[in-house]
Image 1 (tube, one colour):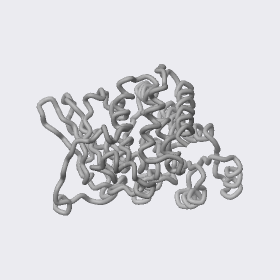
Image 2 (cartoon, one colour):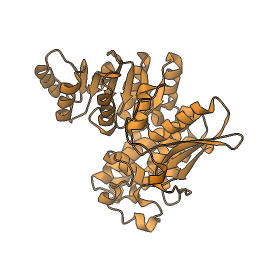
Image 3 (tube, one colour):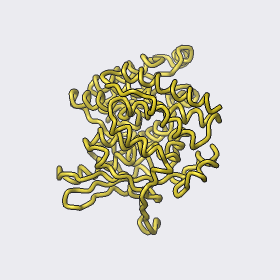
Image 4 (cartoon, one colour):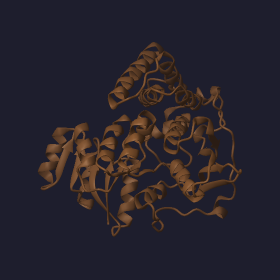
Length: 383
């Protein structure tokens, strides 16, 4: 029996993680759960999975949960989340948190010697050097849950240590594949939230539509697999059957193929190095029929170009890219800016930024604050 802590248990990754755990009650048990404000869902999860501790955003809600669930340890706030991440009996902590708040609890769990199954891009985009140093120092497993990075991870295991020439990171192209800038200028929020293949939260769905998600994944892959950005190629693959691939020095390519179902990489991360039987949808070559591939258009989908620029400049620039994008997407979801102004806002924040080194989490927070203020200033000028 492996005990699992799920950070962000009421979100898309969290609920699908619990789907996997629910399916294999003899293999997995839930030791800890956390959520922000969707405590109605959390209450149902507590009743079903009987965790030893939970964490919520607000202390007043934590007090209500303590009164409602006798014997349950309830934490609150960021400090409580860090305590929960390290002080439970879970061997593996699933980071399904959204945004920058995932960094501190991830580091806390690593320092406690726990393996990490991560789906929180910001953890590596903003804190890659800090996180990977801690992983190496503590000797824990850092297992990717994103379908693309799980695919690369699996392909590299099949390669048995042979030298890699490049990583091929596939992208669905999102709902606006083939659009030109003039067409993107007419995109509405409703249009941007309709992903053709995946069911995800609003922020991640918009990132897919702008292709920022692929930009963030380039930075993730660079940290995870030790390859420079120039050796990471993005290929648009609308069918989302090949989740990513690795090319070796002899020209051979190993790709991981599967149905577009997040429960598959989640299950692999939870059960690693073993595999469980039928955690999600099965893939059929004949049902799919055909697979196609295209080059991305970084001139139209500017976020992709900005991501390559951020990792090339290094230091604090990936933090700026990530935080400026978070702020811009929130403004788009709130109806303050247009779809194309997301990339424009990120570009502005990067243009006015002066590079610094990231030596600790406080450095990340400082750059985050500056980047968000830059985006707000830019948006205020627009409106």
